[in-house]
Image (tube, rainbow, N blue to C red):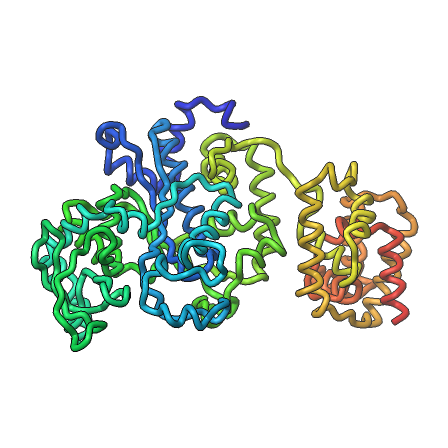
Length: 539
């Protein structure tokens, strides 16, 4: 059953009660605006990005998850208009020079200046921020996201934020009353919601300021870049200043009319403070989910400086874009380990859910992660989708073939198992063949260790070999039954089937875990499997 076979009324009715988290989030927007936004205005979703670094998996997950809520809202509202803003905070001052950039000496001379006013160290764009903003847009376009890009520098420099900045100056004391109790004593002495940009050096200054004329945008401060710390009057309009980020966040919500923005758990307090500031400015905090952060395989928080995370390119080397989306969809309010070991399972679970989708009733479809992922960028959920071979089984095959196996070699074995075993006929599987070869080369092959079978295990392996010789045309189910029967035969001395399968995995595959053996034997071929047994018995 596809969306085409489901009436709009049935889809909307099911969405009203769906417990899938995107619908739960979207219903909060319906509660906020039961009749839709005034004048039929679009519901505004926002994601933020700091362009001092490159887009990463956190960027992807926030845009994807926000998009999922956006699409859920469109279903619930019967197609009400929406916008997704990807906002780049490129007015921030450069704090330090990243180690991996060219022209470090040049950048060092611009520390403290807004990223959008620093020359591009790569020499390809108007500024460092323009370079990284272009990478962000290429990144989002790569995955087909539908978004509107807005750079802070454009809004500040062209006066697009001037009225909002005027509101900050009008409510300067009230904002200070919100922020000062949250700061350490030392920070209180220098804190200001407004960060003037020095007319002398162009640095973003962290100095106390005094409002001179809110309507004209005039402030006064001692400019440390002036000789003797001269007090200057300065207009913050037209790019003459930026705001402290918590104030900036609130101002942006109000100025852009943001209705929904999610963030990580580490920003919980910031959301509270920015929400209070938004109220002072005449707006209100948007709806939004606070999601848990990623952990590494040791359960420690992922840190850029530690390099203990998994990059998006690494995931796409060993898995698929769909599997990444599937992994990020599930349980966003629970901490998730993000390391290469989670990739294979995510790939197989994605395809398991995709295969179920067409036959599910609408209520179950809306709870299926794949339904949301297929609709994420305007597509329609539905359609048959399955893999003839699981990724786990594919990895077992490649593991047996060795670290130097080739794509052609893998496909020659897939012909034992897959009808029309042609890469062109199975593009998704062919892509996973490439991923499996890389995963095996980098992570599996170095860990494989084939042990010699114990005497009772050798007897069982010999019996399996003899049985296989009598069934040259057996299918995977018959082969699985055969394996079970040998393991259950008391003459072979296994206390339970688990011990038998472990023996098969460790002696034939070199691993303590493995696949459904009937499927593996069918894939690898009976002759090939008998050769593996012969090698195990002669080692």
